[in-house]
Amino acid sequence: MASPAPQRRINSVAPIRICDNGGWTDTWFAEHGVIFNIGVYPYAEVQLEVFPRHQVEDRIVIRAENYGQKYAVRQLGGAWTQHPLLEAAIEYMRIPEELAIEVTIYCQAPAGCSTGTSAAVTVALIGALDALTPGRLTPNEVALTAQRIETEMLKQQCGIQDQLCSAYGGINYIEMFKYPHASVSQLQVANTIWWELERRLVLIFLGKSHSSSDVHQKVIAELEGAGPDCKKLADLRQTAPASRDAVYAGDFAALGRAMITNTEAQARLHPELVSREAWEIINIAREHDVLGWKVNGAGGDGGSLTLLTGPLSHAKRHLIQQIEQTNPLFQHIPVYLSRTGLRLWESP
Image 1 (cartoon, rainbow, N blue to C red):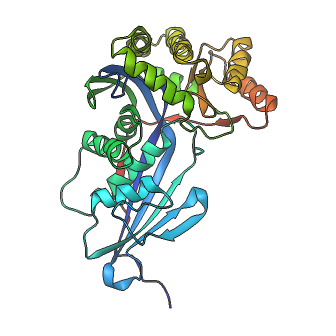
Image 2: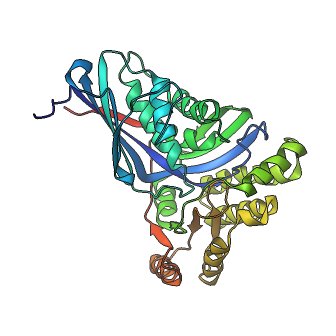
Image 3: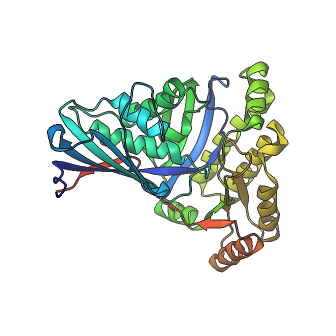
């Protein structure tokens, strides 16, 4: 028997995040912080097909396209089995009793890329589920909801910047005045600066997924004990305003210096936060006179780097070619700056 046609088809997308200068200061143990980051494609994509509950056998079906999985969620109430973040988000948003849904989730960025992919997926999913009920969450409310699901429902360590970047998009200067509350200022620059920054940015995936580790737990324990105004956090905080000012001025050399300063500050938190593979790419970047490099996210094993190249496009392409030839695991992921954050619409 043919499957019934959906009553509604809701689409949402949210950008991932790169170049998060000031990261680690958006956490509960930092208490206050400043972060600069950039929202980019590739997006996280969610499509929600909505059915009357009586027309389908399973009330909630998740299609995790990147993993080649499609499964029915038989039980919620904290019993999250295959993809806890997705299932917890669905539980939190409370689907109306008379409805059934099939959720398809996809992101072109590799899982564990340290570009806030899970936050982007959660923001896109919350946005789509929010369309099932009257009223709409603001971008800030979507970001706070996504962060709350990770920290309160899943009991994970989680900052606030990834969710805010996915919800707002663009180039952001985030001031966290008291965890988890923050203001977001989106940098408005001339198109020539925007396009030139977009042309110069390179995202390199190190070829294996990043995951939290003993190193991160050691760093958190040390920072928690040192207090919110310790020098290591202060060193990270200073890179965000330097990045903001550089972008406003169109000074790419200054932005590159802020990225390098941030990566060096990450390494002072713990040497293993800048991995051997990351240093391998940084050394290649130095040989090609790259202006800046930033280990994305918290750092550690796996993940990715953002590079800021010089003025010559052919030199950028040669750099990418050499990086990918150095190690078959290294992968260039094309990125484009996202002027908007969460986007939500319904198919006809």
